Image (tube, rainbow over all chains, first blue to last red; front, top):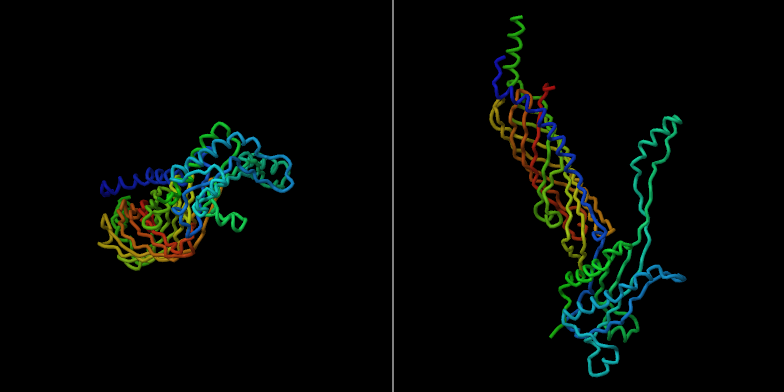
Length: 226
Length: 207
């Protein structure tokens, strides 16, 4: 046949290139990111529009973290996390201090000539929520096939396994002291929420540190005026 | 036997001349690479190597075709970039996704003549872009599905491997006009990406 060599060789290039194409496309579709427990921590920060954070100079912060529970709950489900309270409280306070705010010992200090409008409160609360997740049983195809053969026409419902997980949430609220006292209700100006998977003791301390610092890093507007 | 040889020889020589005449069809399968640009790259700053496309074209003559295409591009990216939201921010490890399915009609013009080894072409695609945008952060997942009207100017070439099969290489600038709102609540939800499509095309009769 009088076919140019290039065209002839081109014909034989098709197969390996098709195989290459077929192998590259599916492998590029999904990627396993191998996420660890710490990768499920999320940090949300929000402020009330119009707040002048430089108008504040002082803050008051109780030495207690409130555990928020449904009414009627007898046993505190997150009592075991009390051992991290000190770390959370001191790291939060030191972050505010690093931004130029001065911590007052208690409200009595305000009567000593400090303008209440320059003071804010820091309140920290925690709660946990239980969740259920589902995943398909990889063996379903095998057993489903078996039962389908055993009892023709009958197909069992898709079988899934479930797993339980607990999400711990820490809420840090910054409230305007003067307005809160005046209306006898918190007047929040900034809130930071940390949510993550509970139950990984080996990494809790490190995750707490990262989470609290990140809340401040993503709130660059939080600093005291001169 | 001699007659058979002559017949085969004539057929092989004539095949290039038969390609891309009125009524001929071209089917293309491509591996699609997608590079986000503009606003889309704010959310997804990664090139996608996971995509494919199918092209069908009907030739009006040896230089023009009308057709349609279906393709899919998938992007996913792990990042710790802080997400600005109104009066605040969200941080933490995130997996961001885009799934884009362009469903397009197209018109192409081919330079040169039938039988040339390389036929450069350019064209315009127009149609719908089905866009799925998703953000997983912490245990939370947010997603947004929208249909967009879009355009994709295209330039490429067909490299003849034999009379009926070709390597197909093309670049498409995909622009999906604003539709719905972004995951972050922004009004302008247009997206754009540069597609580089590599694959094969077969004209009628190759199989």
